[in-house]
Amino acid sequence: MSKTFYTFTVSQLIEVLKDFPQDSPVVVSGYEGGYENIQQPLLSRLQHLPQNPYWDGEFQQVESDVKESFDAVVLNREVRHD
Image: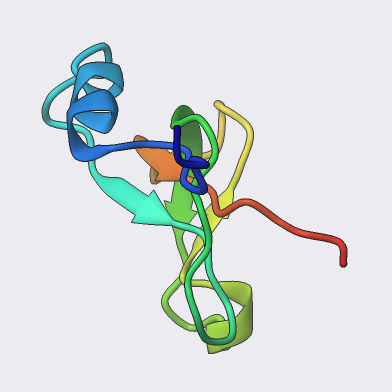
């Protein structure tokens, strides 16, 4: 049996995403180059802040009572500490 080095296949990710509101936007965590595995998708309250520098991302997590915020599905990258 070969070693699995990824967290999701397309079919597995589709199954997980079926549980979220289907009109939800999807955002990903990032910064720097390359690619990483993703963590379990989650629904998060975000605010769009396009003036942020690229390293801070144009979307930021906020409390549910913040005006002009919205729910989005977040695909966080796995963070390795090596």
